[in-house]
Length: 523
Image (cartoon, rainbow, N blue to C red):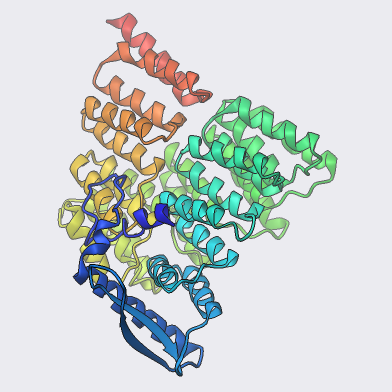
C-alpha cells in the first residue's frame, strides 16, 4: 500500500509540478497538509453520496477524529446509520474504472483503505487495467505490487497481460521482463493473448529474431497461428523489404484453408502500398468489398497515406471523401498527411473545401481539432502556441485524450516547433497522462527538423535513462537528425547501437546508412 500511496496523487496538476517527464513521485508529505486532506475527503464524500444515491442508499456523513498528533479530520460514511458496505466500495471503483474516471477511482480506493477495507481482486484488476489504458504505468505497477502484497488471491493471467501490454507500449522492457519472470515464479501459464502481445511489440520494434522465437514457441506449445499472427508476419517481411515473401504468406494461408479476414486484408493492402504497388492495393481493396468485408479506419488510412506518398494526391482526397460517405469520421493522423501535402502545393482552396465538407456532415464539435491542425500548418498563426490551442479545444467541449495530444505533438514536431511540442507533453502530463515512446520519438523529430541534433540526442539519452528501450523509429529519427546537421560520422555509431539493442534495422534505416556513406564519399 505504501508504494501506491507514494504515487497516488502524482497525476494531479495542482500538486504535481514536476515538469514534462513526470518521474518524480509525490510522497506522503502532501497528505499532511490539512487543507488538501480536507479537499480530498470532501471529494470522496461527494463520490460516495453520488454512488450511494444511484444504488438507492441515503448517505449521511459523520465527522470523527483520528487518534494522532495532526488532529486531521476523518470522515466515515453511513447508510441509514450503518457504514457503507465493502461491496458498494468495490462496485463503485469498478464502475468508475469502466467509465474511465481513474482519478476518482483512486481517491475512492484511498478512502476505502482509510476506513480499513481492502479492495477485492476485481477492484485491483479494474484499477490496473484502467491505469494501464491511459499510460499511467507506474501507478498500475504500484497497484499490482500492493495486490501481491495483500495475498488475498493470486493474480490471473489477464492482470499480467494488462501490465505486460502497458509496459511494452511504453518501451519499458525491464519491467516487462520482470512480469514474465513473475509469471514463471508463480507458475501462471501464458496464454494466446500473452504471445500476441509480445509478437505485436517485437514486430513494431523491428526485432526480427525475437519475433521468430515467439512464433516458434507458439507452434511448439500448439497455440494456433491465427489471422493476427499471420498479419504480423506479413508486416515483419514488409518492414524488412521482403514484400514479395510477405505476399507468399497469403498463399500459405489459403492452402491452410484460413479465410482472409479484415486484419489480413489490411496487412496485404499496406504491403502493396508501401512499395508503390497502388494498383494492386486497390484491387485487393475491391476484393475486400466483394467478399463482404467492410473496410475500417486502418484500411482507409493505409490507402490514403500511400497514395499521398507516391504523389497521387487527388486519388487520396477522393478516398478521403469516400471514407466519410461510408460513415467513418476521419482520423486526425491521416488528415495531417493530406493537409501537409496540400500545404506544400499551396492548395488552400482544396483544404477549405475539405473542412466545409466535414462540417456539412455534422462534424461541427469534433471538427475543432481539424481546424486547429490546418491553422498549425497555415498562415493565420492563432494556434502556434500549444497552450492556447489546447484551451481552445477545451472550450469547444472536446475531450482531450492521449491520441489528441499525440496528434498535436506530431503536428508541431513536423513544423519544427520544438518548444510547442515540449509544451504539449507538459500539458499532457499535467492532465495525468504519461508521454510514451511514440511521443518522445516525435520530440526527437521536432529537434531534428529544427536542426538541433544535440537536443535530439539528449532526448534519446533520456529515453534510455527512463528505462525505455529505443525502437527502430527512435534510432532512425535520431540518425536523420544527425544527417541533417551534417554530422555523418555519428550515424554509423547510432546504427550499431540500434543493432546491439536487438532491433533489426528496417529498409529506411539501411537506406540512411547508405546515404551517409555516399555523403562521406562526396566530401
